[in-house]
Each structure stands twice: as C-alpha cells, then as structure tokens.
Image (cartoon, rainbow, N blue to C red; front, top):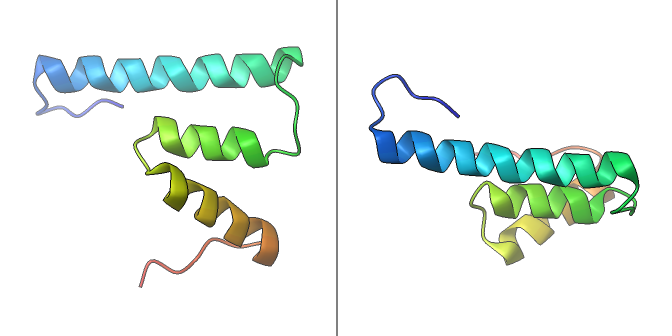
Length: 72
C-alpha cells in the first residue's frame, strides 16, 4: 500500500500490512493453514483493518450469495 503523499509512518504501516498478508498467503500456499478459504479471507480483512465481526459477516455474506454486498 503506497500513497505518494503519505508520510513515512503511513508507508511503514502499509508495508507491515503487506508483510502480514504475504505471510498469510505463504502459510496457505505451504499447507500450514488449510481451510475452505473462509478463515484466510477473514484473516486478510482483519489484517487490512476491518473489525473482526464485520470481516466475518462480509465473508459469510459472500459465501452465502457468491457476491460481495453492495456498498450503497
């Protein structure tokens, strides 16, 4: 996550989130974390800053309907 006008702190935070997401994907790729995708998707949303309850609800909605909820 890079924003051209962001200060150093914002870039460091973006790199930390990127690192956490890459670590999560690496665990899934290596078979260390295996699930139907629900746990990984929820963890990715939480890592990106979504509240845990909201992340779980969004993932459950997508699993149930096959599409993300409308933002409007």
